[in-house]
Length: 393
Ligand SMILES: [Mg+2]
Image 1 (cartoon, rainbow, N blue to C red):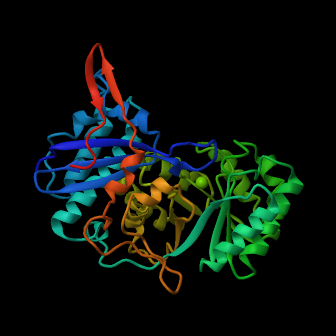
Image 2 (cartoon, rainbow, N blue to C red):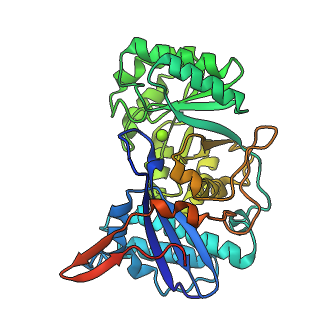
Image 3 (cartoon, helix red, strand yellow):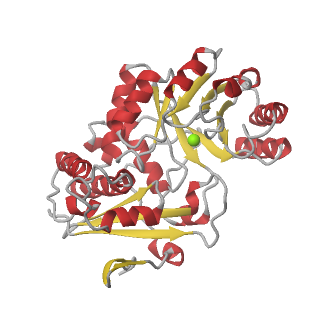
């Protein structure tokens, strides 16, 4: 099979608000051979990523992403690894290319799974998928009362694990943060699993983060995510050494497997969180999951958007029982909800698993997302490099 086309679609909500919610817009990827179609989603700024796909070559290590993908043979998983390696070599100096590659790589797995009539996790070598405990992933409320209400609602929906993140947490006073944490613990209940995402609030300031440790430990938070920006590994390590029971999590910013492996080796974190829509796709995420397991670091998906992205993010650790947690977006924007007819459903006992259907197992509802498609054209000297393709044909 030859890759005949790669189509990128920029979708967005009518209003994109200045909040920590990455589901408000989307870069959707469609890859086609003569007989099969695969879909993927980049965790990315859509327009910048489209530019990286079509831009003119700057020099030999700065080709547009399409240069390494269109026309390539795709018969087996090794071909995906070859295409990935080519994108990385040919677009070495084009920093957005990892984001763009991620959605394409994901779509190639979807396409191969459909070709072989197997779920992607089978193609990755897992015979079956283990059940995961989904944690509902939501933003902190504006006030502790809002947070308490949110936590109680989510608990009533059947989730036993809950992660609050971003919002005012870490950007307010110590007392306010402590109130938020106690409200979250009260809402999730004594027996619930409580997780906190600081959203890089303290950049690399260990002392500012350490001030919150007593309240975090008092609220029995299982892990504190991203206290610092992605590369601040020394700060991660110093904070991890000062924790009592609390573990540190991070790694969502990894845009290739090496970055994630350095995080595992040097951060002191107990959890590594990988977004298949950013790290380069399912293959790199699987490599990190395998690496983490050998070093007693738990692999967790990072997913805050659609169920297409969620299915993709579950594949790299689908067969690993010890990686038992799974991020589960519970308040995505209507666009992300509308994308798929299928869902990664939470079962009666509160567990999830990736779909058993071929590929990523997600049928898309293209008609429902048509209204979110952004009409884009990129021209250089009168030559059109990109115009929004037809979504429904
Ligand atoms: Mg996060």
